[in-house]
Length: 241
Image (cartoon, rainbow, N blue to C red; front, side):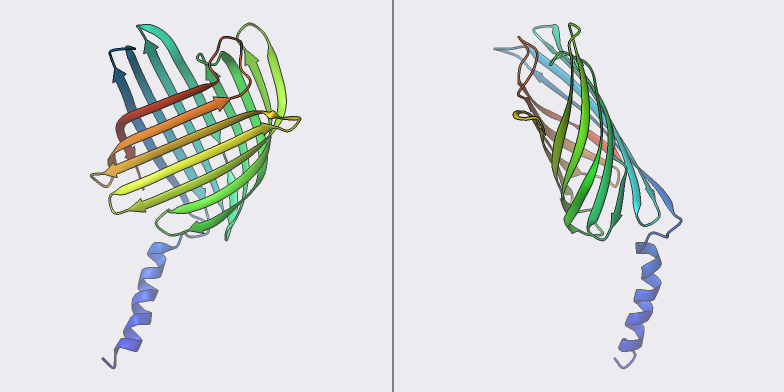
């Protein structure tokens, strides 16, 4: 027992290099998901979605997540949903402070969007984060958005983009939830709200079963297009550490 005070600091010293990321280290983390849905009866519907993300971490303060997703869906054997979404959100962090940039592209057959481009930046704050990747963070970005609709109309607006991100893990379960609220700065009744929640059950170091709930509401859309859309899908996910 008299050696215990000397042994503990030695163990901590040996363990520390494996936990800390070196200032000149570059890490790449990848995650991918395949999901689908089928329903029959009142409405015959099939839906397929895939999403991918790659995060580049440089040193102790810089990261650059790049995400992309594709959704394809039919109702009564007719194409209703075909959507592409790409986002790059490089950020700088120090302690709990974050500063984000964003560049985004979107295309949606369901909402009549031929092309949508976003560019912006803003601060964020992590109320909680730990070495297991669990996090509760809030950010607010100012973005400039250009949308080109089917039929030839277009709209350019400035938005405030508030994001609440929650990542939690317990044993083999992981919850990842992102909530977005994006009002038009010139007219707050014109806004977009998005909720994306994924619950994963991990059955190996890299593979998991996943259930995803995705909801989008947009107050201003083309005539005849729905203002909201909800998808619940089940699938498999792959990730690297």
